[in-house]
Length: 316
Image (cartoon, rainbow, N blue to C red; front, side):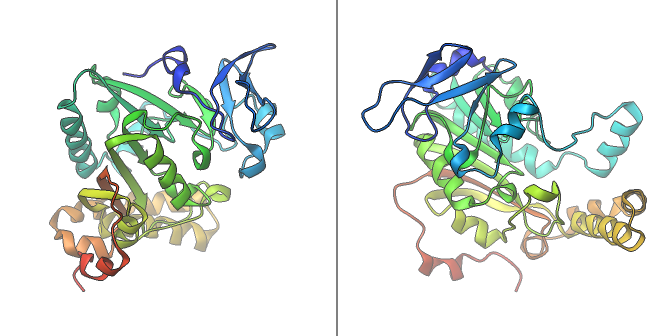
């Protein structure tokens, strides 16, 4: 269940110094007294703290405040018909649902409620609904914009939360949108408790989306090495070549005709190709995957570079 800002205040930290944050005058949060630097005050907009070190972020402070913390990108809300079409073109992946269930099973063995952090939680990701519905989970979320699903706004390169404070972290369709994915993964490792669990989904063969904020892609092997400080529980393709083919048809049409509408029509014409992924063996899917996933446990022993070649799970 999604917790309130009040319920996670005790673990909020300054993204620059790591100091605790306390209420400040004029509707803000400030760092507690620190000998290392002067106090820093972070604004609260529409009830949502903006906990970002703008000196080391792709985000612009003035622009974010002028938007009152809302997204710089248009994020449409779908009506009944449009929502039906979207679900037809982008159904929740079976792999995601199974992996979320596996994550919840891992957490169910822990005493009491488990605390889960959702990085990039401005909207509830496909297949992630169970996290928010489970009464045994306390969900904390943040994104680079405000929404009812987040308690604060932050940049994942400097997660403004205490170390060793979460049982699990979920990062779905986010790592392609950060400048330094390895730093974000290091932050995830930091905020996880010993033996904490991470679940990540990241594109491999997907076209540019959210244009100005799209930077990276990963093969399944590259994704594994990105999470080298974690012990693998399971990993593989989160979407196969069939889904990637549908996306390719979309972008081919929109590029040829300079039209997003043409792309959407092409996507409708080839939506069925994503269902072919069910017939593709996992080792073949990995080589042409639209996206990859990693479910792993925090480790003190890094996965060695020398083991990467033998780790490869594809068909070549």
